[in-house]
Image (cartoon, rainbow, N blue to C red; front, side):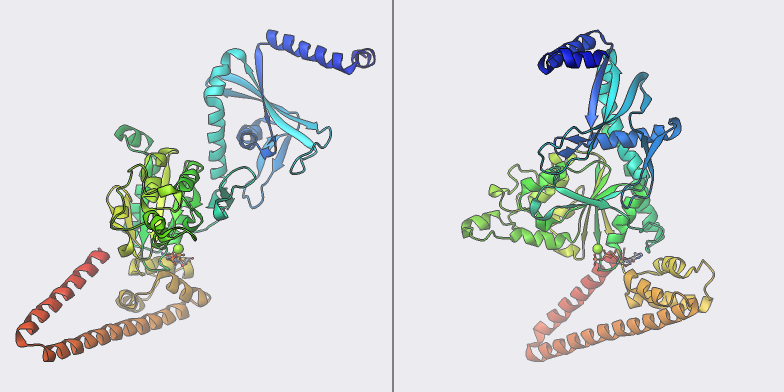
Length: 498
Ligand SMILES: Nc1ncnc2c1ncn2[C@@H]1O[C@H](COP(=O)(O)OP(=O)(O)OP(=O)(O)O)[C@@H](O)[C@H]1O
Ligand SMILES: [Mg+2]
């Protein structure tokens, strides 16, 4: 009645002014303050709204009588949420706060770049005025952190990639994301079990090492360099790492990044508990020689990356040179410099097929903490594949077949990718699969040994020719050299295997 009286008696301006005054007086005497977290902030989606919704879902599922259920596209879990205009009390460090989910109809469609939903949704947080500092200081950070944790535990990990040409999305982010669903785990990864355990222990130590990193004054990050021939499981290893730790993956496409400062901005927008991946780093580094069309040659020379004249990492301008191209030192600053610490708990993984092509600056100790050689399939690796693809447990395989596999697997130099293909083909008939695999291994081993023989034969012939052509004194020294280089080759191979 009062409201209708107010409507008829007072003009709208006066009504508005009196309401404002009423609110001001009310706020003055009220013991509470209120914070509104709306779903849409201007035209952008408010991330805090989504985080609060997820955070409250953990307590709402226990406390609430009426809940709204949601399941995101491709998500594996259902989240509970507060229904419209429902309330929930939360406790943080002994401080009681009240959350209310407020849903109102949007009055009229105002002009905007994209159509807005008809309902206006938001959370209102009610806090006692005396507790304001606690809440603003750490509660909202805690809510964000908790929401991320819930998302990760729901197996809703994300795979990010940098947008084409460095463009930003509608929310101003340079990363685009999709749900990450790679099924690779350390159980499915075929490699030497001792090496695998070592890597898993290293990852766990890293994830649990907050106090260690704090104590030793090191940034909480770790670098892994995965190298080896194609198809030996480098990408699968990255997926296994992410699944093991529950981290998001940022797959950095270096060819889409044009300047060092762009690279830094990308880094700033990554979250903690994530793996930042640069695949085929050797190919990306070659790209640093790119020349911008139309650049003067002097300028492009100075902005290009040159192995011999690469400035030491961390030397300020870092070869930015007007920001025309991304340089090795820019990349090193990305992983190592001050900016690399703008988040925490991050893992950098670089992969390459040709470690020998990489600049020593990338390989020096302390930069990439662990160098992991992904080798051709070894016998322990093969056993894992036989178990996963055909269900062979230890001792299931006939001794004779096992011996044959053991004999030929190293000589054949087949990648786990090749072997898994061979096993998939005959997975309905286990015995046939093993028999065929042995045949393939034998063939490949034979081919390899013939290749080795033929190359050594050619070398011998060449040596003989040279011996005939040159005077006697030189022959001896050439033979010596040859022996030396053979020895070196052998040593190199030994080192690789170890
Ligand atoms: N070590 C492994 N254990 C189990 N499966 C493997 C392994 N290596 C390769 N595979 C299989 O082969 C496929 C290709 O492997 P992956 O993409 O991980 O190789 P890569 O080393 O990253 O190759 P590239 O150097 O070409 O990127 C995978 O999908 C997986 O099924
Ligand atoms: Mg790969």
